[in-house]
Image 1 (tube, rainbow, N blue to C red):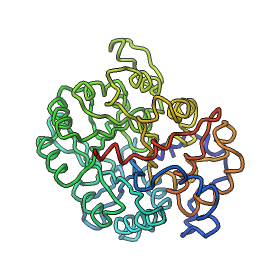
Image 2 (image 1 turned 90 degrees about the vertical axis):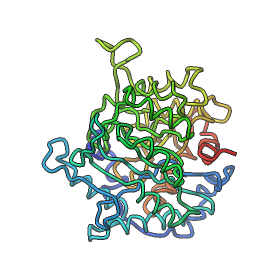
Image 3 (image 1 turned 90 degrees about the horizontal axis):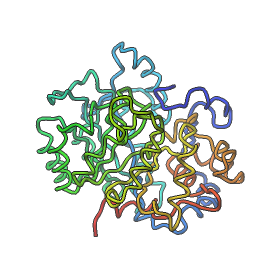
Image 4 (image 1 turned 180 degrees about the vertical axis):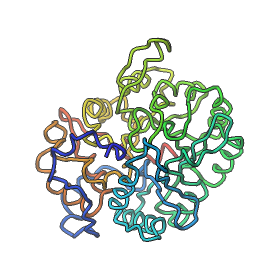
Length: 402
């Protein structure tokens, strides 16, 4: 379960509130589709400006399309990957029948069709693990989603899908690939450093960062501890992204670095204290030089494993008039909202972030439409009377300049 991002056994104390498996109940019944909570969720936001900025395009490669899911081939660190594969398939209501990739895309199309007109999903590619000399290592790559595949899927429903490419900075053709994906319509570049073997602080990234800034392609990169894919968590240290910011890159730290701890590299490398990753993210957000360059996304921030102090600070600082209201982007981290043990509305009630009356409708909505559940849940979050500003959800403006 650790491979799914579950916070140890803590999730199990919520059994059977959410259950273990996604019941996949299909289309929302009218009483839920028109529920006052859903209407309230869309009030005050323009659906045409709402892009879900963190949606994983997954695949196992059964269509020969440039997707791959590595079962670990006996690696100890990947001993639970087959269980992870099962949970991902269940979350997306699919059978392992030789048509996973095609059906995953069809399911995404069905889900987004159930959202208001204008709403879009930003689909994420994921490059392979590479050595420092730029050689791809498929055997060390947990999940691989090719740029061409991601672009092709986005073209299937252009009124609903956008996409972000993934380019490993150590690739010998990295700069040429950046220019190519920009021409193909990529809105951003996506990294998971721990899972891809990327050191964001390496001088090997300098040319890559310079070209990213020149092309005005933002970098959406996981920061903090990574539990959904095996790798080196030291590479997720938020402070390692200073190098990108110094080159003028617009950086989005996924999940606001809301899990785990890292060494405080600002105090030196040798013997540096270990500090909560979210505290490092907040420190960087507070530096004047990073305004306009450093952003965060709130994908997965309502998971049981993350919904502690980081969520409180986000609600305090990203409310209307807050200094983070224009610097945070909403994303669902789909398919994770459909993995039932990861989320608990009741936990959020107990933590003071959600009204008791919201639990029942949110729970029912999730069983039919996990994307709508994620959106409506975040629109209901509150702390000391503060809610996330509408600008957090109207993310299109970040990716499309006037």
